[in-house]
Image (cartoon, rainbow, N blue to C red; front, top):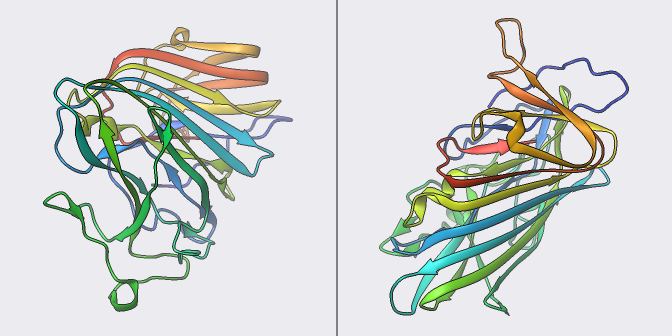
Length: 285
């Protein structure tokens, strides 16, 4: 993941929202940036025939310091009731940060909650060193005291899996999921936030049947969204005061691909898609 060059926009802050590639990239930034955390979808630790019928993802920036994420899911279980281990993968911080856990948790993520069919679920946190942490339906938690890799400082060689047991009844199951973490930043951009989309491919239908993304920025902000999980600007709605325009990537452009530029005075922007099949890892703003 490379730093984003500045684009001159008078009298507004600069932000970036785009869609990146697959799994977790350790050491994403040098010390000229601060990368705190990434958002992610819930994933089944075991193989399952349960599908994601609906997801409403709301991302809200607070006081230019925090990102609040709230996700509403509708999962469909076509067979009898079953219990699965479900996980949330949280990348470790990197750059000008301290990467060691705080009280056993991700040092820059808080307020993690999961509510399923009206009841709160308890969770545990595991430290894992690679994507092969699932061994026969169990999460292989590394012992940091005896781990050969880095466990503190600007870069650490593990990431976090917040996991819990979820009992899916036959038919529709509603899951509400929240968390908050610090806004990442750097010398070339005001802030950055990643959210992994391809995790949806690990459910039975390998897509999100009905997907809605709501982005609630603060007033008088510009940001960019790469055209990776959508094609046209008319797929987006601005609920408030603002405008959007196409930005084409050129040989001299700091953008990696064609994008949209949003200039929002107040309100939020949203996108709705059916049968979303994410091909690239994450959007980031």
